[in-house]
Length: 181
Image 1 (tube, rainbow, N blue to C red):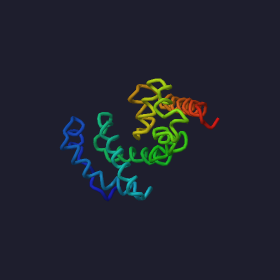
Image 2 (image 1 turned 135 degrees about the vertical axis):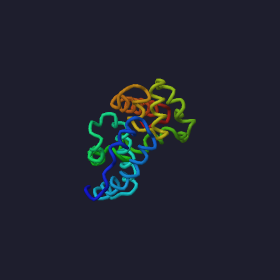
Image 3 (image 1 turned 180 degrees about the horizontal axis):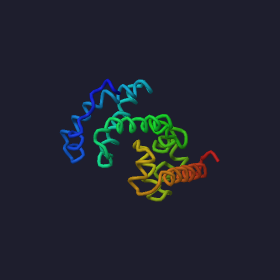
Image 4 (image 1 turned 90 degrees about the vertical axis):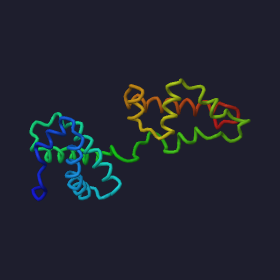
């Protein structure tokens, strides 16, 4: 860290007071330092971009909490460490699976031999509005945490709703004429 020019405390104070240009100048100084940090630990360029962005976002949100403006770079590196830990704990990337990855897509496609089985629309109509909304959001690619925030509930509650909804759909399709029951 000592080989990099330290960030001017006055610039940090301006950024903390809401000066976007000052924060942009800080970002330009920190970006290469953060990239080097993440590349040396993770190596995957796509992941590095996300990690740098999340670290800078964390830094921006936390600027009001920074007590010593001269310690911004150390503060940023601590945020980078937290992002690295989150990455290794599996909070990044497409690792969010509750059931088989294609399970929800299977429900959204038309059911073969529609005359012998309930169609997907009819099966979905058996679900409550909240469960249908959650399944639709998952189908559109929303993560459990995003769905929980948008519905004002917990991630665990959303996952439970998905499990229950899929179980209910499976049962309805198995009990329909021509089902696999």
